[in-house]
Length: 161
Image 1 (tube, rainbow, N blue to C red):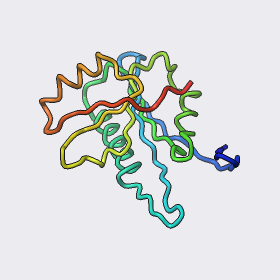
Image 2: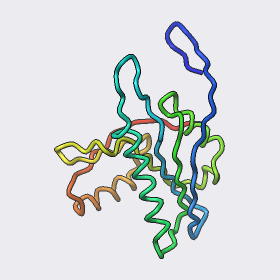
Image 3: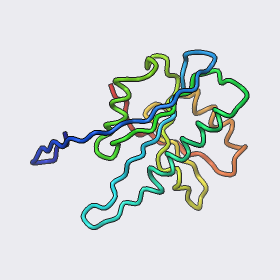
Image 4: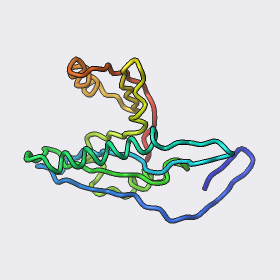
């Protein structure tokens, strides 16, 4: 259901998330996510998906493949989720939060990859989060000198309950 200022519209369609799981040494988990839908053409304006959803989905698949090929078993169980219907109201991620493959209390971190193809000339990787803990910020800052770009932090998003 989508609501506008003066109207309410309900549309129905079938959609699905795609979820993969790599069992770690524990049931503590890290979730990696990206969305694979995009807006296409609306009102004659083209909304290209390559720098939005396609870049995040590609990064998600590359990470899943790299971890799956690794000889070392990860400490955390890794969950890879390609969300659908994000552009029309975060439907895929809301569904996953209500129906996770592991209890959310076991999730230590969720990394959502969206618009990873928008690295600007300034070579800054922007990290947006509803919960940038001091521990995570510290870890990122410690690794920053190992990369040819800098990190910026900004609050964004929200927790879905």
